[in-house]
Length: 350
Image (cartoon, rainbow, N blue to C red; front, side, top):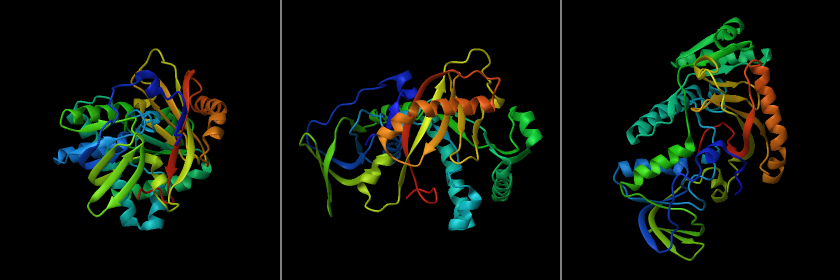
């Protein structure tokens, strides 16, 4: 599946971080993880921590699916606001979903610390109203988060201007959030795992999967077999190829990153994560080498050819969105890219 186009910043900057072998023999393993991106890397990490041997198989070079194109904002907010999710599944379960996401950020920071990965930083999150008509819903969201015990603060238009220097009618400031580099994090997890017995094979396309009572047998494009007791699908958005129900909707998203900005390392207040209430929403972050990354302008379709043709226009639109928000900050685009992501009706995973 064609998941990306353009020049993802992480891939351009860091290239192929590590080499992994192609599978050229029959193997047997207790657990096989299909997919070696950030999801597969984290699955393998947790299994190895429990003493469970596992093998990762990826059809591409490691990390060259969605992981290298991720903008890597870590937020406990899913795409469905808490107050809307509560109406769908009940307040208790909605709060639990948000709390689990908040806990996941702390756990990811802890994992990074344990394996010696440095490119992850806690960040506050600034969620602002894109228009006055959004203020009432944003206030409702704030009240519910506050009631649920999240560390949030309400800012009116004057406070937004004073704190962030942008014009917006209101905002929610959250204490919980982080940013990372999913591509580098993936490789760091793999290198940590390899030293502890993890096996990784990339450029190995699986053409057949047979489930039996005794386990699973997989065949590769080159005719080799993989036998395992258990199989974990960690193929990201490509999992739709293995699900026979229409539970995931594939969409297209776009991102652009600036040239390195000389001078101050604080491009805005504490370089917080910024995003708004627009639909589709706009989101911004900074990078360790003092660039600004903008994402958004999503399209409600999965069509790689159509998506790729839109990239130049979407890049220009994202730059204009930034200039409207921060007219005094320079933004000279250097790289832009497009990617595929999947969504569900309530924003929750299956």
